[in-house]
Length: 465
Length: 166
Image 1 (spheres, helix red, strand yellow):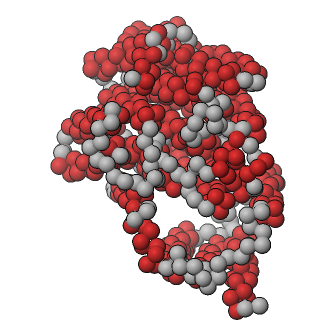
Image 2: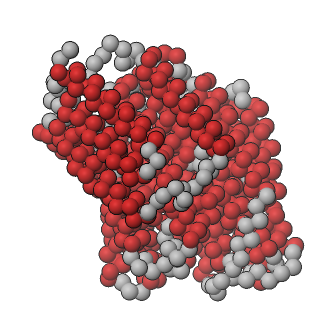
Image 3: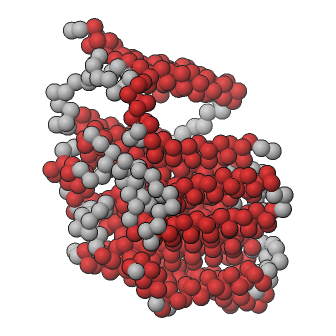
């Protein structure tokens, strides 16, 4: 409850700071301070200190996994604010409002990590989505940004309609918004004994959630929206918001106990979706000339890996999704913070970056290595846990082999950027001077990624103790 | 057949025909007007279910405010046959196939669902839709979602200002 209320309050504080503070960089520091308060509040609740406690009549349930996921998300947002906060000032004049909207998104995330029924789930999804439509269109003079925003809004509203229809059918079947009823359980573990309303409702929910996390056949919005939105906000959407969507997805289908997860009928659907997502994301990314668009497709491909957490639910799954969220978010936020500083977003724009900006070149390489899952970076263990959970679930070796093959494909297009940075001649121009603070922040982030790659229990240790 | 049954079937037919006409009308202004008819028919259903508050809100908010805005937007955009985008024949076929699949799922759902066979809507009875009971439920059991949805509206308002400001 701490995090939900504090994040909404932080959003209101940011709105007022826009009136009171005229200096734009001061707004950024207010946002960082507010986020630190938020992290502290969430941390206190993680260790059992409830500063604000409200009886939610069983509609919200806080568990350690959700609270720990909150912490990862907040820390990733802190990194994002530090690295990209000053880039937000270049998008438009309403910096304080952008920060406020981001805090409202965080409020949606905290609702999604603690919902205990479809009603709160729906509200969480909406609080998460509405500010994003606006952030996508925040570059008002840019036609591509406008188009992306409108497209995202229309497609998003449509998928919300499907979500609501699913919730209605499930409500009709069970007579409640809860997830723990026997009808819901049998609809998730196997279709046969659950009647017909609840499975159909769950299929509609499933479709809508696949849309929100941009899994393939429902991914068509993602490249256009990620490409059209201002790069700073693409960074936020592709990492923090996507991870939160996945967490809600998993919480919905693998609700409580470890032995309770998607049954064989669901696994078949998931198998097809995972393979399609990996195929479309990776193969299309190979042919992209713009690094930003390539990252959009690669985020679809990464969604394929995250879906593994849904495919089989065992003790690896929770560790896997927590680690994957951290590894993927940190690396992608780092890459995007460098990308927004570049004059030219195409592959050639990175030519010769190692000569002009060696620190940026090196950290960017670490981030790309982590995304492709090379050992000694956080991405390796993230992928390892995901695949291990699928093997442990049993009977899906072919899926794991396909995933490994596509991970190899992803190395190809990530290394094209590294090749441009180190082995091609050119003058990689930046659009703003690179401050030494920015460089230090990047080095710290790269160090965190390497530490997580060597010693992943550093993160998971917090979770268990 | 009681009067409520006759009303129920009349409103159902009205809703379905109007919904079809929304899609089939060539002129977008007629589409919007048919949509208003759909909302009125559904409001009639709410009244039959003894949910007066919902019926009135549905009429005021959807049929009244939102549809009038819709109508203004469509009139200002001045849509006609020339500006209408020509859709690919394959797109139409794909749309018909996928829409037909969804229709098939829903029809078989209604036909097979044991939860729904032999049951009738609670016509004229039931007090949950009355404003008193609705208010009590909203401010006791569902007070947390009620309050949290204010964050949603606040963010929408902030967004409207951000987008609308020069």
